[in-house]
Image 1: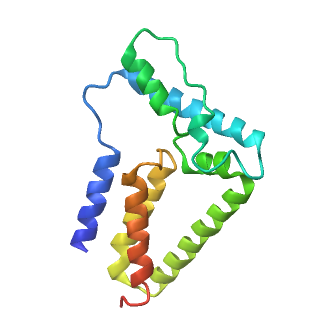
Image 2 (image 1 turned 180 degrees about the vertical axis):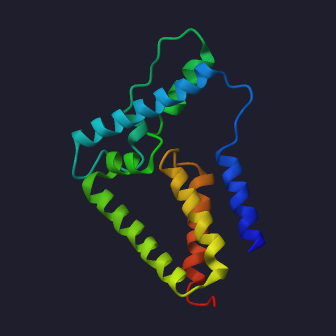
Image 3 (image 1 turned 135 degrees about the horizontal axis):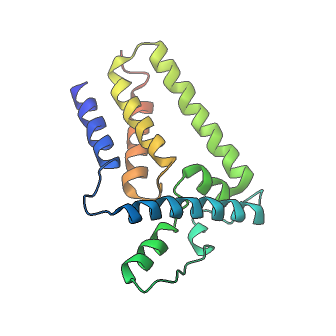
Length: 168
């Protein structure tokens, strides 16, 4: 239990770590980049609503230029648009309705399994459930392509799925 709480604290701290060097303008730019990513994802989905533009192809369809003399601003802009900063937006843009339906089935499977674990009072898995859902919730507003997100999520889900029938 203590290990799970520690893991949860580390994950939450990593997600909400604030860089003291950021200015108010840079923070508002982040909101702009996220909005821009969402609009791009919707436009890509409109191009091919059933199958999307292809898994991992989001970054090849984005508009990657910004008029700024500051090299750092240009790099931040381009890097921020490599993902729509939402697993839902990215999934529907890259895999369309068919892929999004598969993603929903997997999410509902995890919810159903987790509800069974909670009903059976398998308290040893509770910290892992919380940690996995914290990572998932973060993926709703952050890019999911990093090893940190995908690695931790699938590692935690693997442990939960492996231990759900064994834990008392």
